[in-house]
Amino acid sequence: MDGLKFDLRIYVLLYGINPMRIFLFKDGLVRFATEPYVKPDGENIENLFMHLTNYAINKNNEHFVENEADSVESDHDDDNAHKRSLKWLYWNLKTQGYDTKRLKEKIKDIIIKTIITAQPSISHTVKSCQPEDIENQLCFQILGFDVILDSNLKPWLLEVN
Image (spheres, one colour):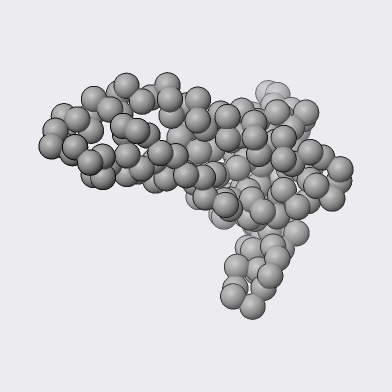
């Protein structure tokens, strides 16, 4: 987007383990690299500002643009900023004719399947630490899912924090 590599940070609340309840936050972050993307090669492979979307790295680039819309007076994101809201991304894609409802469903599917995959390990850990949690109220975790979209808008899980 805008010639820059970007990824999404989607926040999830995992509440309870049996039954497991998963809540997706309505918004999240879109984090942009600060240098125009070029396919990696021997010349540019070490350009972190081009290939990584981490805020901690990109905020140090002279081209980094802070999102001025973070203030309470603003109702929308700064279209030039290197960190924008997930709502902004969905709005932007929708105005270009993309099926954002389908994209959201694909992302939700990735999140649910990832948590289901980890459920046995999570359940074991919780039961080891809280064996008396009969009412399933002592386990919660806020997770950050990092997702990248390919050129066909197919979401791919990068990592879970």
